Length: 344
Ligand SMILES: [Zn+2]
Ligand SMILES: [Zn+2]
Image 1 (cartoon, rainbow, N blue to C red):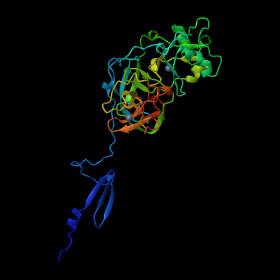
Image 2 (cartoon, rainbow, N blue to C red):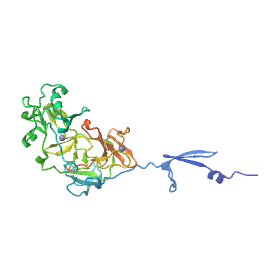
Image 3 (cartoon, rainbow, N blue to C red):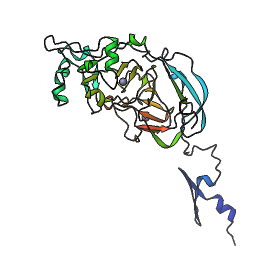
Image 4 (spheres, rainbow, N blue to C red):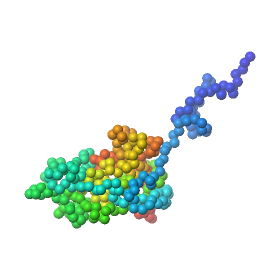
């Protein structure tokens, strides 16, 4: 007579390893075991794991000429109170990869290639042509708009440092109302350097952090990614704070800065067809262009406009240039500034 041999039956048990679960079936029993309750030696197998890829900030992603000093490391305090290692990154405040081009059109016959763009968060990008200047009373449904001289056809432009200062601020002086606002990079000596403190290793926050009115981060070509432009204040003074074709413009406090992602800073091409990288958010996560090689926007973005893949870990895709924003919120902890880490 043959007797069943328990050890042999056990050895013949067939195991299926799936994500997060190990399911074992034999003729006599079925067990499902949570993965974290067992130790699996999978050194010789390629079974799935749920490890999330975490990508550190890479100083070598910045363009040559984008920074005014070497990147250094220092201890920083994050928004959750934890201490962490941060990079101190000092950007030049001017694009390292192109010359800043025109903002306002000179007259009411100017064409699209003679001036920049305007967007007001309404979902549209406008070329600031002469026709656009003429259309303002209709566009904003207000007959007080008149950005040009009727006798000459010349557009009212803030063409001195004094008028730039008077118009490129929230409380626009009356004499600068009905102006197309532009400031020369020469007024800020070629750019205003800005210092950023960014966690070297991004840390997901327990709750997303509002972008609010703080800057969003920095572009790889040395330009600040600014908070949304204060469109209501700009329009209520009958001004257009013209952007160049790269969605940047200049004021005397911040120098040249971006309010949208128009492709000019997408310098890190990705070999797998993914959108190119254009900068870092303050939380250390990378920001990439909106569209990939096939002009497709990812469909799985969260409310911060981020998602995760194995190559890049968690990362953002910039909003369309018309939206007056880059990302929806910070997914990760941001470093507190010197002011915020003082006595509480
Ligand atoms: Zn601005
Ligand atoms: Zn992506």
